[in-house]
Length: 197
Image (cartoon, rainbow, N blue to C red; front, top):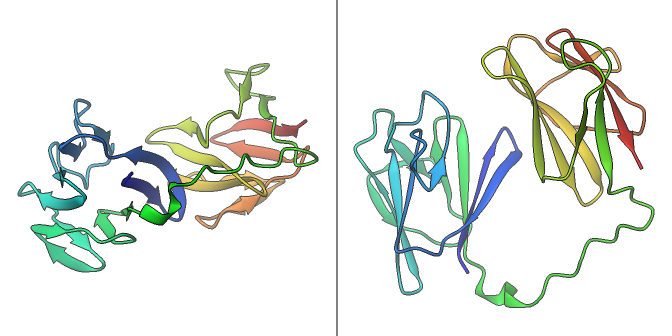
């Protein structure tokens, strides 16, 4: 089944299976795929599906859309094409050969259960279970970081804001940094601890 993978700066935000004839992308909350960023128009584009083919169509957006680096209005998609909208990359995947069952990730010894414990700030004492593939922390518009669950463990990366995320006192850039049990995070004046079970 075809799907799209939405990411920014190499951090996967969401994966969406394309099941409808028309999947809408845009900033407004009623879109099928909502991308909350000012570079994205309210109704930016659609992904249309006809049988096994999927096409991308830009809906006269303000900032336009690019596929594999070229500005496009409408184009048939091939598997692994990358749609760019603002800083967001949307990878189209339609791997017919990968229809077999996906083996479950080995959880033995990898510590797949993890939590962020808030040590200081308004939410001190709160715990955030890291159950989703991507968990964002921080205040939108001020500073936001993303913790991503990967097969080899958890990584953290800076998403937005002038306040840099600190990992054990060292600023983290947009490149993802691996998290270890007991690591201390600081973002916008709030201190947190990464605890892996």
